[in-house]
Amino acid sequence: MGFFYESFYVSSRDLKTHSHILIIGGGLAGLTSAIHLGRAGIKVTLLEKDTYPKHKVCGEYISNEVLPYLKTLDINPSKKGAVSISELLITTQKGHHIQSELPLGGFGISRYTLDHFLWEKALAVGVEVINTQVIDIQYKNEYFLVKTSDNLTIRGTYVIGAYGKRSIIEKALNPKKISKKHPWLAVKAHYTTNFNENRVALHNFKGGYCGLSMVENQKVNACYMVSYQSFKKYKSIADFQKEVMYRNPYLEAFFKEAQPEFDKPLTISQINFDKKNSVENHIFMTGDAAGLIHPLCGNGMAMAIQSAQILCELLIKDYKNPALFSREEIEKQYCKQWSETFSKRLYAGRVLQRILLNPTLQEVSYTVANVVPAVVPRIIKQTHGNPLVC
Ligand SMILES: Cc1cc2nc3c(=O)[nH]c(=O)nc-3n(C[C@H](O)[C@H](O)[C@H](O)COP(=O)(O)OP(=O)(O)OC[C@H]3O[C@@H](n4cnc5c(N)ncnc54)[C@H](O)[C@@H]3O)c2cc1C
Image (cartoon, rainbow, N blue to C red; front, top):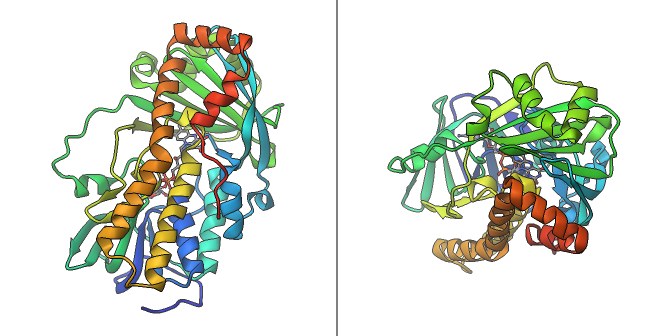
């Protein structure tokens, strides 16, 4: 077991090495884990299929609950232009609106900037980052062998699965799992327009919802999720926006006024909210690989970061005192803490999604929220955590 004092970046080449911890995927969960473990002096190798910086389909609103933890890792998003956000506007398909303060508030920053920033931090604390795609993970005799698409084989004592919501590796790990059709797709682009920077807006339309919020450099992120069923009747994104989304007057005003910053919007499909396991084949799952909360809750990124914190604290205890736990005990503790921390939030997200996608329930909620405004922050709290204790 060695310590890494230098930062380095290894491009794809034939390499056979051993790392105490291998991290598969360098999104928020993977990079936060890498930084936390790297700072503790543990040899970490992170394998990421894409290069940084890169735009990602995401609402780009992060709950402030993660700030105390990020501070302990010397990560300050405001250094990269993150915008503080403190209020929420929800509109119904008919254009009625509910306004509320966000109990904890949050900040807006693009994934292009944030993931790149964390990658640089990971390199600076000595994490080995390899740009490659993992295609197989085998566990045998207390070790993992991880294989990549460019024929690398890397050995590790522990593996963290931080590969997000859709990865080819899922199929390799669960060949018998029958893949269901997942009915959601998502579209995202940045725009320039006049926009209230303190606000995150959630505008409903038939079959989906669109989040608008400010990120760094005075850009507005528009990110929407829509059921494939609603979308497939239209020939293009432009047609869909015009025919369906414009029926909500807030969305019509936004898209007519805003100037797109991307040549064309980014899209992803087959988004899946199925229940997952926090440990699978002895691999510790973090972030979306362990479970995806409905994006309208705006808490997926906080969950990715917090799951990294929970796991890293256990792995560091084990590293400092290997006699303390067996592998099975760490797995058991991680599953327990993951479930205690996130299960209620995931459930609340499922309920909220059902309400907001139903036009009748939307209007009922609008009436209730106007009569009892305090109900909205209380519901938001159910889908978020408390500030992370460090
Ligand atoms: C439409 C939409 C809007 C959202 N809006 C918000 C929001 O506003 N606020 C919020 O908090 N959350 C939001 N989320 C959720 C949030 O994006 C995720 O919860 C978060 O990105 C999870 O981070 P992660 O690290 O688990 O996964 P990711 O950020 O997806 O990272 C996974 C990484 O693994 C890499 N990878 C995958 N497979 C392999 C492989 N085989 N080998 C090597 N690398 C691999 C990928 O390239 C990627 O970099 C939204 C999600 C969606 C779909």
